[in-house]
Amino acid sequence: MSKTKTVFVGLSGGVDSSVAALRLKNRGFNVVGVFIKVWHPDWLVCNWEQERLDAMRVAAHLGIPFLTCDAEAAYRAGVAEYFVNEHKAGRTPNPDVMCNQQVKFGAFLTFAKEYNADYIATGHYAQRIETSDVPELHRGVDTQKDQTYFLWTLTNEQLAHSLFPVGDTQKAKIRAEAEAAGIPVAEKKDSQGICFLGHIDIAEFLKHYIELVPGDVLDTAGNIIGAHHGALTYTLGQRHGFDVTTTDAKRPGMFVVAKDITKNTITVDTQPAEIAADHTFSLHSTVLRAAIASGDTLEVQFRYRQKPLDAEVISARDRKIVMRLTATAESPAAGQSCVLYRGSHCLGGGIIG
Image (cartoon, rainbow, N blue to C red):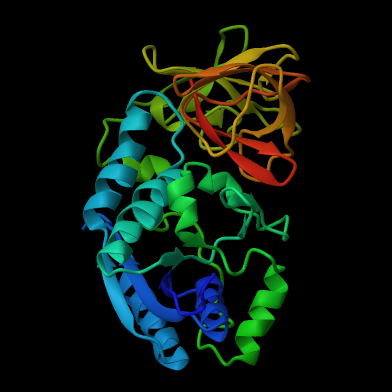
């Protein structure tokens, strides 16, 4: 890569994106810091002004220009409304995936191209590995921070214009690097959660947009054993947010194993729901950055930080993939992302149907 290229770095006001900008500047790139302004509801407090101020302080410290990208419309439609609509349909959304698809590598990339930037860069823990053909997306070296699960929707074209400067380093070293460089946010805690949710839970947020009706919690025999706050807000494997009536102080924790949004019930058990080996599942809205074929065995990941599972490709065509697990696993929920890997190489993924 030419070191005279221009890179727009998404400065979030956190340490990872700050070090990303620092590294690119030290490599000789023409670096521009950009704060991406997203949507949040008027009734909910969001500290975006403070985050933008922190990003500005970082840009000033590094001596780089600073811009603001207004991505409110893309965030509201592509992330917040998607989040609400998926819950209405009884599915489990992944807003972090959609934020990357619609905002960071959507609206922000478009914004950067309008200013004739060559690349965008973020503080994601992922690696772009150069090959003789097209760049490949690989897991970050810090296995506890790897974020490729949330980046599966990137197309080859988007990846060609994207850089991940911190993905080849452990998080502890990134923070030490920030401290050594005197970056103002070097000791700032990592952000958690989604801005439009703030510090409230999903049910509290959704009740502003969906009528949530309390209903019954059932055991696997169909007996009523408790109450919940609205079946739409629960997902398979969830262990909290519902009440089970019991006098047994030693009762084990309960997992949501099924839900019926028509009857407004959830079913719980002492063990999470499982799908057996040889079970087939399908993915839609797929994105693939490398070819796969029937008979291939890949690693799949249904959840962030989940231990990858082996699965065989049955078919892959028309943006739909059918796969078969090779071992018993905890059931994924419809709407969740399934990300595909060959070793550290993230091939793409799809939405569980």
